[in-house]
Each structure stands twice: as structure tokens, then as C-alpha cells.
View 1 (cartoon, helix red, strand yellow):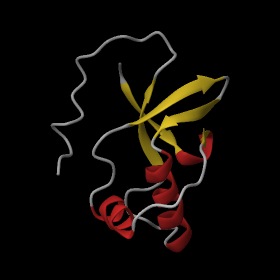
View 2: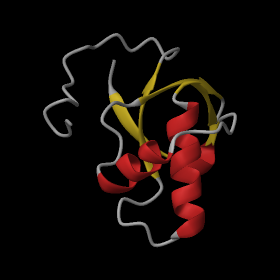
View 3: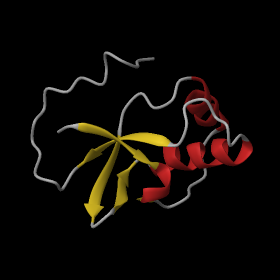
Length: 94
């Protein structure tokens, strides 16, 4: 499955409480693994990653000029793309 970057405003997710360590990790490192979403027309529904998206939403609220911006790495689960040779891990690990 191909990893894409999508603006957080296009992703529907359930805001959830998360540990402060997650906030700090997203602030410092970003996402180590892409968020899983399903596509519905021109927006996306979060399947896995609600807490990480909640942390990013709070970071953007606290600091609109956040250096990593509003683009989120995602894997679209229901688009039929089964290509699996994309390697996100080589770009961002911790």
C-alpha cells in the first residue's frame, strides 16, 4: 500500500485523550508510522491513529506555525492499491 500525505483537515477522526509523551513525540519526531484511513469521496475516515491525530490537532492549535505542517502520512486501506514496497521506516524511526 502506498503512503500518501493528506491534510489533517480532510481526515475525520474521534478526538481522544492521549499521554503527554505522545504530544512531545509528535512535536519532536512527527509520525513514525502512517495513519490508516478509509477514503470516502474527497475526505478520509481514520481507522487507526485517533490519538496521534488528536495530538497533532492540539499541536497545531498551540502552534499554527508547527514546522512539520498539517500534512499527515496515511495509508488508504480501501482504495485497492496493494503495492507494498514503499518503505516509510527508513525515513523516520525511533
